Image 1 (cartoon, rainbow, N blue to C red):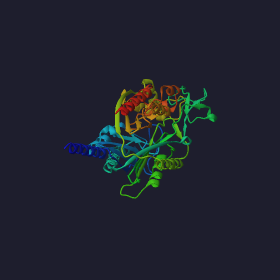
Image 2: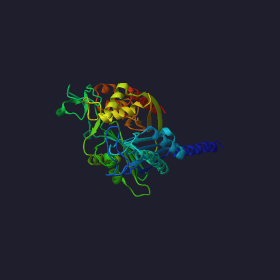
Image 3: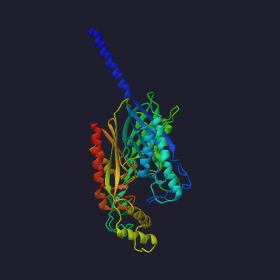
Image 4: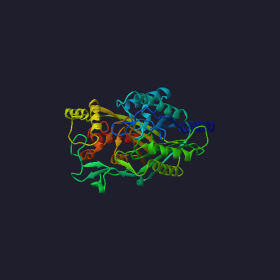
Length: 459
């Protein structure tokens, strides 16, 4: 009788163990949806860009990768546009939640920051631009929902590689007196974009983060479901016409190299890391292809796992806005009226318009910060254009074996210079829609992301 009881207990143990193992089995799915604008949509932005989307060099997409472990699901989505406002992200999250039940903090939607795409923020650019912004809610939601609907048994792995030849810091400390006035007529800048030894440059103002990460999702038979990459360099080229830049070239090259027969096509995407002060080395098509070759090679050496812990943490941090005072507002109005004749930077008109937009902002913004854990890998994201030194500091303080950062995620709050970088001045620090947060925003955001990483490690 005792043996029968022992056998029953042992059988029950194995049954529970087997059911738990099945519950924790990994699944992954992917999808992409075309988000290319129509020819009447303007490409103008807070500072750069211009013209309309009359010529399409290559299409834009919203690409999504969903991962499920047990009952927990997360989705990583990358959109080939310059930026997307927080209200659109909120509506995408709500639409996905209503359709799938995915908790809102479990969805990370970022933008690549290609400068040859619309800026999906409110810029008073007319009906066509407004309609395009509205269309993104349905298009991006469709990609995310489809990725969740495509979930299938999967193995997940990750790896990284250093690619320093493809990135350089674009901010230079300049020789005293070598810089002209900024758009506000002030001569306070000590740093400039794209300086160099032959352009009165003394030294670069910061480091680079050359680490490229790859998260790979494969079927048990080894065929590829999706690939999510991350690299910390800015867009590759400006100019006319619509293009996903090197991010698009990367995705297409990887999809071609790793495509396998089946009902669901393989989906590849590259997110923007901490690239606020980093410029690319190489033309977009060459850069995208070379990074794709490295990613495909990495995949062949990745140890894929059949289980991992998924955790999503999120918080909203109130950050003050550097709204223009009465003097800057009066100056902006004078510039746009053509009555302000003092010397200023060639972008004085653009920054005058931006100052007037910024004057309508609230006194503070709620900045959404998010951490997603994939086993021993952590992803920290913010809605800012983060400098490399901040990204490196977050990596160093993270309790995880590996961490990477995604910028321009779940909203858009402009550049995030450190207080020391603010003191040097230059384009990425000038108060505008493109750099609107308080001077002490960076240490506050960095501390909060590190706190979320530590909480995720304990979960």
